[in-house]
Amino acid sequence: MLKKCALCGKGALKGKTVARKGQYKAKGGTGSKISRWSMRKFFPNLQKIRILIKGQPTRVYVCAKCIKKGDLKKA
Image (cartoon, rainbow, N blue to C red; front, side, top):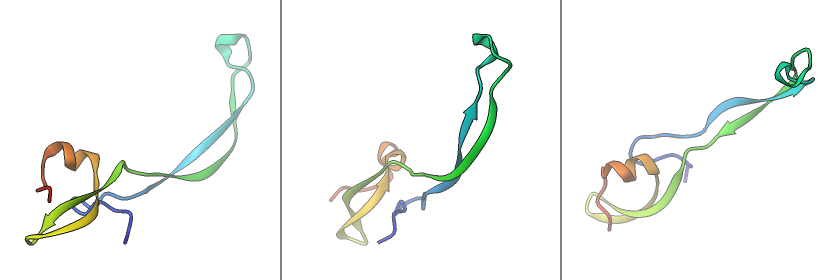
């Protein structure tokens, strides 16, 4: 089972974590600079719930946004 929303298809996104070096100008330094970065994943807020799909109760992952919208029928 994939970690994607069963209703809208929302899944993980790729992004970067940035490591900064140096003192900020507001604290009296000459400014912070980016020293390195590494890739990371941003995961959606998925909840495992039982919903009706084609009349059958099925346990699937659904994002919190779809639950709040009410696009589903709980089993």
